Length: 253
Image 1 (cartoon, rainbow, N blue to C red):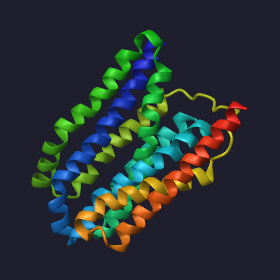
Image 2: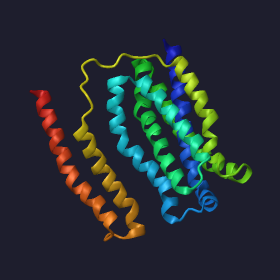
Image 3: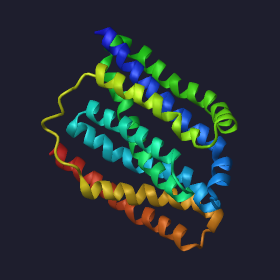
Image 4: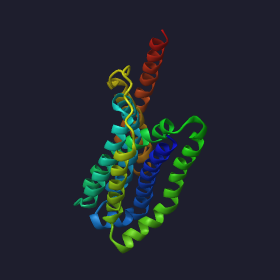
C-alpha cells in the first residue's frame, strides 16, 4: 500500500514541478515572447494575467466536478489539457492566440491544483501523510528555484517557443505514468449536481476583483473595465455569502 502511495506522490510531484516551472519560466521569458510575437503591453500582460485569473476562478468548479466524477479522471484530463495547450501555444501565430491558449492551459492547471493534495491525502496512511505532503510542497519550491534559470536558458538557446514546448515531453510522461499508477476511486454517490448559480457567483466575484486589481495600474481606477470588475465583486460577494449561508442552514436542518 505504501508503495502505491509513493507512486501516486511521484505523479503529483512531477506534475507540480511542471506547472511551477512553466509559470516562473514564462515570467522571465515574457519580454522575448512579446518581442517575437509583436505583443503590445496589454496582450503581453494578459499572457500572465489570463492564466492567473482562469486558474483562480475555475478551481472551485473543478473541485466540485472531481467530487462528482472522480479525482483520477479529472487529474488525467487536466494533464492532457495542460500539455495539449502548451504544444499549441508554442506554435501560436500571435500574442492573443497565446493568451487564449494560456487560458486553456490554466483550465488544465486548475484541474491539477484542485486534486493534487487530495490525491496525496487519499494515498497515504495517516501516520505517513506528513512525509507525503512534505515532498509535495517541496516540489513547488524546487520549481520556483529552477524555473527562472530554465526560462532564460530556453529563450537564449532554443527560442521563445520552447518556453511552452518543454512542457510537452514532461507532460506526456506524467500522463502515461499517472494512467498507470493512479488508482480510480468511486465518486461519491451522494454528490448532487454542479451548483451553477454558485459557480457563476464565484466567477463574477473573484474574477471581478482580480481583473480590477490587475488592471488599475495600467488603466486607472476610473476606467470602465476596472469599475466593472469592482462592481462585480461588490455585488457578487454578498450574494455568494448569503447563498452559502442558506446552503449551510439547509444542510444542518
